[in-house]
Amino acid sequence: MPGPVTAAPDPPPEPSRAPAPAAPLAAPALGSLLDALCDVRTIELQLSLPVRDRRPASDALGLDALEPEVSEVAFVDTPDLRLLRGGVVVRARRTQDRPADLTVTLLWADPASLPPELRRLPGFRVDVDVRPRGYACSCSLEVPVSDRTMEAVLSGDLPAYQVLTAHQRRLVSAHAPVDVATYGLAVLGPTHVLTHRLAAPGLKRGLVAERWFLPGGSRCLHLSARCRPAKVLRTATRVDAYLTAHGVVPTPAPETTTRSALAALAGRPKPPGPPQPANTRRHGTASGRSPA
Image (tube, rainbow, N blue to C red; front, side, top):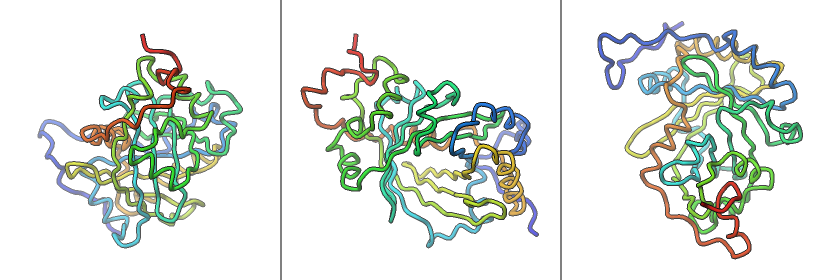
């Protein structure tokens, strides 16, 4: 069995700075989340690897460049990322041989604070990001969208806000900064993502590895595994064991893949979409309130 993957950091760290030791994915803090997740359908454990580990981890996991599922991913935000700063992420995605989807994510969200009827929706899930100092919960609501509609959104011909479902709009309205105008939102991207589905022992849904290709030549490697709330500790332990067996030390990156992608894409946003019809323009901000 090969030993742990080692690679020269990129860029090299200062000699006086030693990398922080990796904590197991199934740390005790993860168990404390279970009470808040009792009536949630799906949990997604997520791990973004540091830049220095991306290439050696890709090689160790055997990610074949000819086998991935190809996606176009874009985000909807202001050019200065005010939605992100307010803890709201709107993602638009087209995927090869799969329906397109539009997802609203609330960062740093407590699932227990959201209405029970929302938590029980089919497209609702809790994302648990493995962070250097613990775990961070986000809540996402994903809905399918026709490819034709998504093409119009990505091209800027159709404002993404008009495509959101009623539940998604309520999430954005309740959590977006008051000064974010819906007609000022822009499409950031798209960028390309290659998705590899790995058959990992003990993981019914396998392990998903996403390679993100961002502007300026930067890359991200994002790993995730979905499970039921009751199996989150077991899943984390098995993901940890699978990565370790392949010589990959599960050390989380300082930033999540979503934040890294938004920061990279914000430098080349598409212009805002066409003006909204008169009957919707009166809702001047994403929160449903007129700007001051």
